[in-house]
Image (tube, rainbow, N blue to C red; front, top):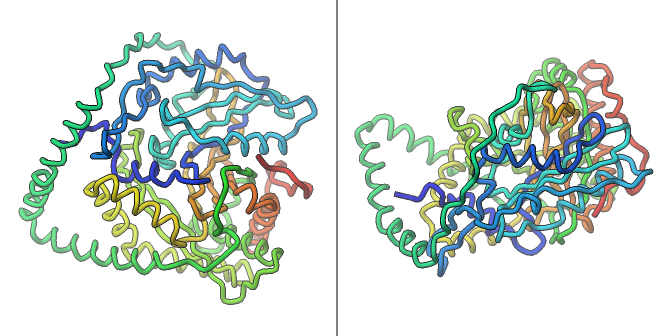
Length: 480
């Protein structure tokens, strides 16, 4: 039986993908109302909540000779002060400087000899606010199920009732290399038996098994077709370690009104808006967009509701076409909607899930090479992930969370990633770009605001009631 603390094949893949300039951490920038709490108060609050997510006190232990994926073990030298950090913006700084700070924080790779996360408390945000910048390795938590993990920091009311003091934390002894190796070899020997046991259970349900096999085979075929080389674009270049960050915000009610008027889903609105933004950005760079369709990797959660809150990744992917050749917002929305409907019916997600599960049977050395090969192949142009967040206010030490801008990591050959999260009636886009390849990341954000407005106009929907969603002045506004 596999050690439950061992990384799955998918989780380990995120380690293998962390090569060259690629950093495989997810994160966010959170804006709060009011003056920041004192650092000591915030650090005590976060440390008390760590008992709810014990994985955050663990580090990776690597198996000798790479005979199995790493396992999570308690860090006997865990120091909260290393992970909980404090900084402040200069007196005249605004949101542009905050975005630049986020870019710098996200440019630093997490230390694998320690628990793989950081949280930065940022004082001095304009309009009497403060911010948190979070950074967690993708192998620790996925971006969909992980939403409710972040909320261990938060309360549902400004003045919650006091909670019991958690018991003192006593780390378990760290296993030796010999013990890790012996356990790995035992698991490898028993893995075929576990597989046979699952197969035997399937044979007891022959009708269900045949139907499932047909679905899986069809899905694998769709994945193979979708994974063909994506078209060349300025978003597919070798990347360095440094990042730029920008954001766009709007009203969730506005997106709901657009999708109702045009006949689709909120995800269709999101992808159509991104398509419009990329079209204008490519044109501004002198690219020919006639007959051009980009390909977005769209992560999807396959975690059951009963598993929400569990750590580790249960995410698969779909490859969604972005028809940047389409000239009008109506046509872009129609093409995106039709394509997404087709993908849902094709079984592509089922096939991708099966491939993800099969990675657990591959030796780590093989998985490392496969991950790097995939990173070198241009299977998609960018990642676009849309995460549903809580639709009620959250509070940190009495301060209301105002906005939450997510971040998705950049792969080895992708210089742009866009993450979207809804929260308490808002929808928030976080744009992450390679510092050198995307010097005009803020222009992409401006084009995205304009594309949303175009979709709203096409749907007969009014302007955003969110003043902060307005277009910002051009210029250098986000960087490392």
